Length: 138
Image (cartoon, rainbow, N blue to C red; front, side, top):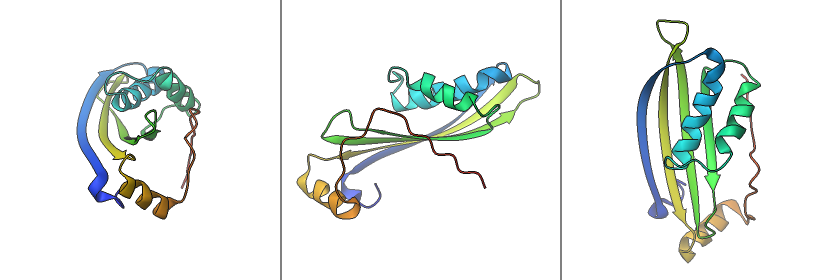
């Protein structure tokens, strides 16, 4: 997105949420934050459920970065990046969730922008609706 600066519209927000919930509900809370951020408060159908299912496999998450690319409109690519960090509060069921959210949009109807994207990344087909997960452990 940085490589086509004249076409990128972006916004960044940060917030900290203090929540009380059982540890087992933490994956669902993180999934909800990611899905709602990408959907502007109206999460795409089933997205939170898919993210929750993925996170639940790994127990009690303490950090999670969620990147969502959306091209539901063929003339635009939307990128949503949510970075979450979980800290325990005073009680065993108190959590503080720090969230940083970045959104960007790229207009593909601009022929110059589309040409620049093709030059940088080559050709591409429409993205699949299936979620992809990448886990890197250091």
